[in-house]
Length: 112
Length: 117
Image 1 (spheres, chains in turn brown, red):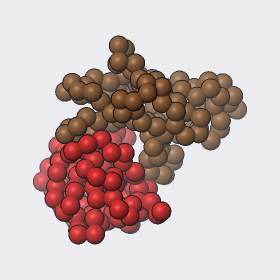
Image 2 (cartoon, each protein chain N blue to C red):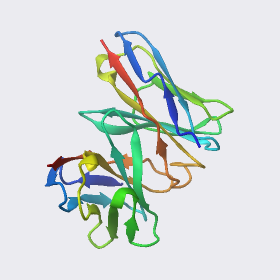
Image 3 (spheres, rainbow over the protein chains, first blue to last red):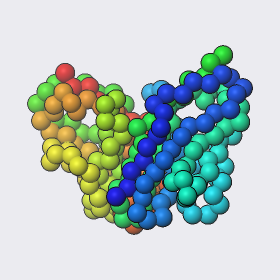
Image 4 (cartoon, rainbow over the protein chains, first blue to last red):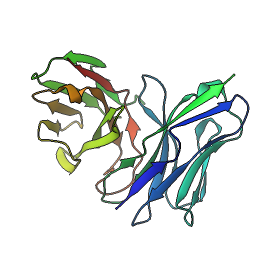
């Protein structure tokens, strides 16, 4: 069985400081992992994805994530937060032939 | 290239009614998936269609159904609406098989917000 856990429901950081959104997964097979962002009243936008190539994945808007198999983690980071990063972020796990599983989401707040 | 479009964007219905939501995928995409998003349950997978066939289904009652047309456009229908069906319904399209046969990236539409009174 597969699952995904986003360890924080809310994260607050000051503008210009680093962002860390944590995600742990459980999967019987080699998973594909994704991070999506959802701004208020908008659909989901793909930030980045891991599909068994490089373990450090770079995405849009300066975000990146590192796949750590030993820790079953896929944490999302950004060196310097911007006000426009305030949104909800979803970690997603997919395996071949199985259902997509979304994390519960982490709401990122950016403090001025 | 135009993104995934969903219509209508907002909908208000009363209990017992039925509703049909529409989704037009990105041109060339053949897989369409539907999701329900609520504050309590988060994002939950409803079903996936590929080449007019349902390929995968989540754990929702039979009141939730869908179909896909030959041009890959998809509709989702909910019959006998309940208050708990109030949610944001998201549609996503992908190039090939999506969930059923691969891990193609899914691209999401803006959603239809359904309110059941």
